Image 1 (cartoon, rainbow, N blue to C red):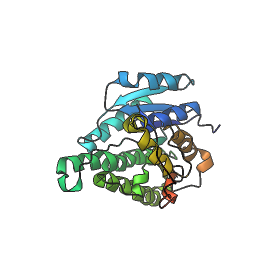
Image 2 (image 1 turned 90 degrees about the vertical axis):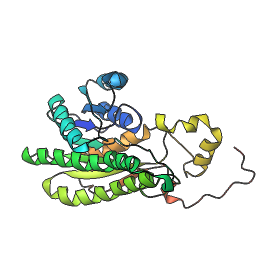
Image 3 (image 1 turned 60 degrees about the vertical axis):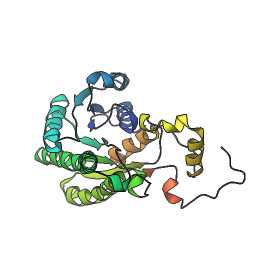
Image 4 (image 1 turned 120 degrees about the vertical axis):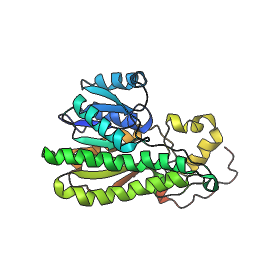
Length: 265
């Protein structure tokens, strides 16, 4: 296993889904972790217990990054550094999907999507980078994007635009921060099983349709993202800068599968 002992990470949006999988994978690899969510600490109790079971320090901080992001970012940074002063890994995972049909999209929905999915990771990374440069810390940043940063989906215009921005941000911040000793990379999941994608479990036909569109034929649990995140944050990836790793079973490589004869899930 890759060893992250001696490192500490803040993972935003880590009480469930992909963020939780990454936090627990970091803990298994030996990293201390700060979990983050916009709800009360009791919602993080199980994740905290799972992380601490690996003998690492695990703390929780609360904050809503979608509302007044600059104020929320300053507050989250201060709370996180107070909880674990040695944070040298930032995982910008918090995100949301709130879309409406494009002709019905309103400013408030669009703004909240962009605040959380784009502005928050941009400025939170800036705040940590300032701190790391001042303390001569070789920081590592991981942006969690989505396959939707490359492939469009109906009723996803704001979400797709935000994830496309993350795709570009990984490259742009790499160019700015690599000379300062800070690595920036990204991880873009395809469809994985999380509380937000529970339709997969409720609708066998939808699950079969998505499996058909994935070369590996799988729609796995979000835990498949954990190992990839650990690798990108580790010393094994020391010369990987500005890359977006798609964890999607090959979905983004396939234009369109052929419909099987007599396909009837």
